[in-house]
Length: 320
Image (cartoon, rainbow, N blue to C red; front, top):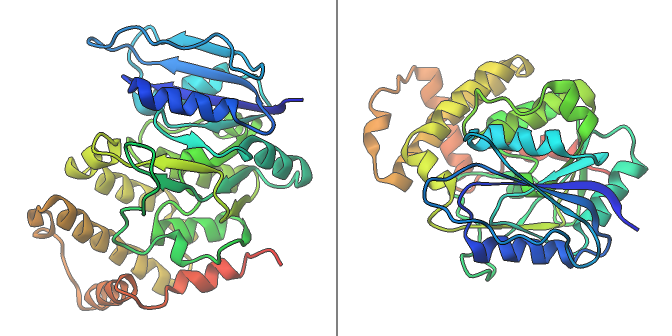
């Protein structure tokens, strides 16, 4: 028996030990995926990857070398394009799945036809694979949710939460979406360099139906110095993508106070990015009206321990 899921692994100069750990986690699935799609962006200094043609347990590994470098988002789309499963689980090249991931995601999609994707919040591991806490200095989805709970998130609420708190549905390795939904929205948008996954899930929820989120981890994201996030923060890619995400989805912010808070959150995120990169110059150009100053102060209070308003919004979608 196989889950009708294609596991997509777009890679660019992967570390062999991390890719081996990912493939081993696929072999350990309680219900194996239908197939593994590995698309490789060419590299000037990388040698040939050692990848088996078939995993232990049966699923084939379909490997494709891109004729030219597509970049992160283009490589994601290429991997999904080549898949043949009813649903797709997008993996980072250094992340791993927990044993029940494919079985659980497929169960959600089969039992609840109205949802467009099954998402779960990941655990985190370090470079060696040991458990570690997430490096999160601002309010994130874990402060909005109850351990063990499940939520069904329609677009209007998901967009508000994403603009206020970032990636509410978890990392790509924790999200399994229907391939028909990917086709319907035109795939990941290459106008985003870092937040393409957030924008994609918002468009999927808007066009194809709500996203079901579980707080029970089905994957583990690896945190290490080579993560793209670290580089993107230093280059302001994350900040630019946040502003682009706000521009694309701000129509969902029908409450004026929430819109003001979302604008304040852009500044708060810049503050935390600056602290992480020790570069305070990026704050110099931020304009502060009295109202925006109050919103930023409120947002900082929330980040420093106040009860997140988003928790009440999230609770309204909790499954009882």
